[in-house]
Amino acid sequence: MRRFAAILAGVALAAVLVVGLTQAGGDSDSGTPERRFDLAQAQRDLAGAPAPLAALHEQSAQLLGGGRSAFRKRLAELKGYPVVVNKWASWCGPCRTEFPIFQSQAVVQGKQVAFLGLNAGDSRDPARRFLRGAPLPFPSYLDPDEDIAKTIKAPANYPITVFFDRRGKLAYVHQGGYRRESDLVDDMTRYLS
Image 1 (cartoon, rainbow, N blue to C red):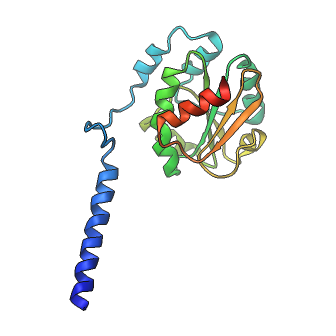
Image 2: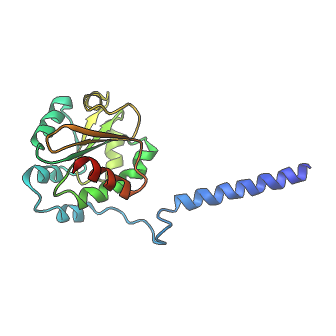
């Protein structure tokens, strides 16, 4: 009986290792390794965007201060464009997982839709290091005490994505991370059209 239990435990351990290594391997569906996001190429792709959106692209991967008043001012400047705000933290695993989705969609939709990051509940140095490795083609506002997050009705969990319509009105709050790009696209179509 002991021998059977030991064999069963060994098989279970092997299965866990195989699943873990498979998931850690990146995009296993395509059979190709994950490509590193090219911020310079993204900025070239976004050239020609309307001025309010171009101003975002010029601040790509930057952490901006100014608190609620600076964030509100930016939202006011973006009236006329739908806005997607992604609340993230460098220590948040699901945030890290969905970053490539936001990198991609911010390039695909960035001439019609404004993207903003909200680095909440985090410290500046870890956030800055994280953005160096995973740059976004839009800026993120620092929100260590979640003051901005509370203003836009983003709950305390991570990640959160908040959608504002063209008039600047709150349209939808998505709790949790996006696992597929198509899910973010669906929400943008549903809540920003």
